Image (cartoon, rainbow, N blue to C red; front, side):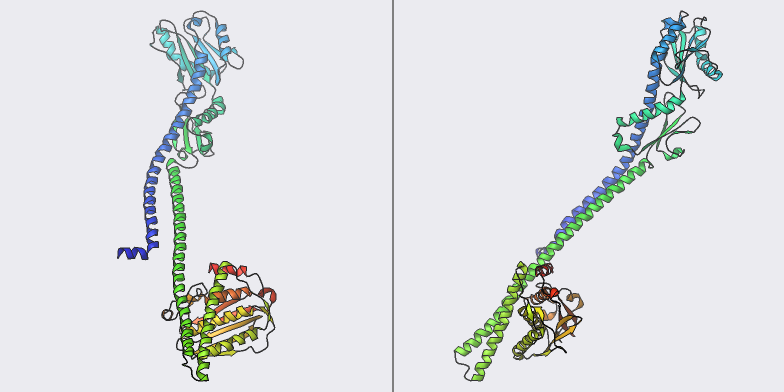
Length: 551
């Protein structure tokens, strides 16, 4: 039972064998993508946070480097009143990003308090900026107290004082060998230089540490100053528009920094990638399923065609045996002298002639179809009277059908038709096939009518019967090779399934067509439409071969 079921439904079994594993893989891939979406959001957030920390670290590195380069004065310079040496030292170092440098000697009062160095003029100047002086006083006051007490400090290093946002100070206390503070050296940061030069450079140089700069052009850095004013970034000033937020660690610690991936958060970016991957997987699955369906459809068509060919061989074998058997029987009757009267001899002779014509027609159909399939079928067009050809076929067939109890009537056109470029033998074969088809499926009716008429510039050859008819679903298939109408009568009537396909090819070779009008139980009318114009009648037959092969 199982084996027979598999054999009958082999294509569906193959389809299921491919689709079911594909569905399982798609299901697993979906869960993998869901997990990847979650992890991608976490990874994207970590990526952005690391990038933000790299920017902050580069800002700190820049200002520490400038401070360590310019503010590390020897303690020996504070024991003597030689500010010119310090002025020369500052001029030689030329720190970037400094609005001013200053130095305070805590062990000698000969300097006269705070010395302010102008980097542009490369000399000490007398400052008139009271706010700057106030900022320096506030930043250095604790260290002055320590020096006044003579207290020793365990370690000293660069520190930042940002109470005055316009005068941010990087301060370096100078200690002697006994760890006592002997002087203070500081740098007042240039806010505008940081905004214009330092910040864009560190942002640009930080990205290659984590990714290919060209691949993450969607990243957007946004910076606000301590008062909430937008310093760098888009037109908007809402912090919520960015993904990861932070502050600078060393200087400008009150400034807020945010980093986002374009207009999307990490979750939105992960979801976008998830939807893209799912869409691509679904599309590929659809393409694969479509390919499988087409392959199975082609295989089904080939199996169907193979089955039809098998039926064709069986039907043709029967069709050949029947006339051959009749010819042999009536030939033996004549040989054995069973026909003693001239009437009997004539009767047996007519049977032999009729069956011979039937056998000839079947063989011609098979040979013609073979030529059509190979593209070797040719037609000999010549001027001829279509009326004479059709009438001759009808008259000949009427005689042979009379012995089978059928009556074939011919209805000529009302007016004579002009000569046409046709192949008389092909037209004869086409009409014979239609009449033979009508006789086979006439059922209880024994009347067939052949009609020739002129309609809209075409010659219309119609063959009408009153038999079983053809359903509308079948009418589009009956001109296909090997196709036979799926009714109960087909099982009782043998045929090759080639007759109508050959009729269609002949009609197209003449530049015309063949149509059918039928209702189940009401009979059928097949009509060959042939144009009168010779240019449309005689054309390359190769064009019509493709139609029959594709049918």
